[in-house]
Image 1 (spheres, rainbow, N blue to C red):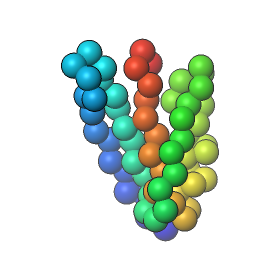
Image 2: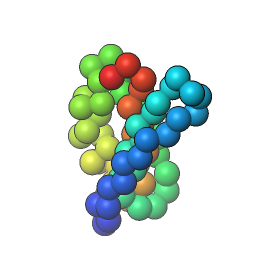
Image 3: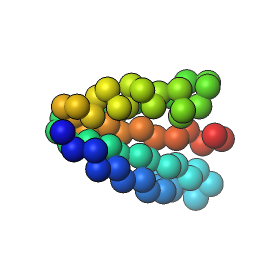
Image 4: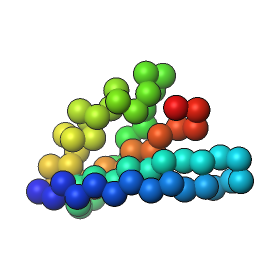
Length: 62
């Protein structure tokens, strides 16, 4: 299991910054947070990193 974490800022549109966190290695999994913000999916991201590479973007406004 790999727990390498990469965090980067993407800007798909001039007024739309997006933070993307990547954790783990293997098959890609996209994890989207709900209204409670990115901290609410931390456990899910950790769970997926056992066998996958989790991509967890922080939605604009958070």
